[in-house]
Image (cartoon, rainbow, N blue to C red; front, side, top):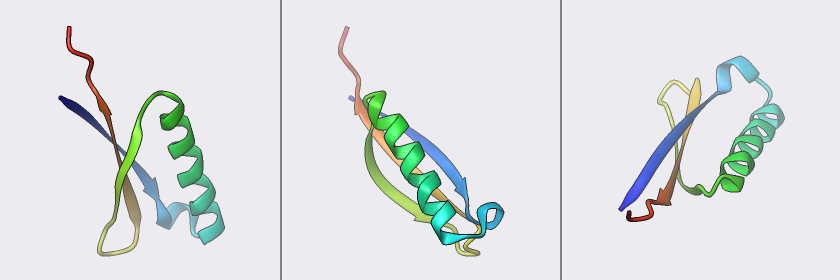
Length: 61
């Protein structure tokens, strides 16, 4: 069974593409250290935010 988590990165707030890339890398790195694996990224139609989707396997009890 899989567990999913989403993190929303504000493009509008950060404005600068380099700052957005740094924030995405920071979030992805932190979650990877916690055992999450990147699955997908979805940017909203207005280009105001991007949602990063991660998954990990649930260990069966």
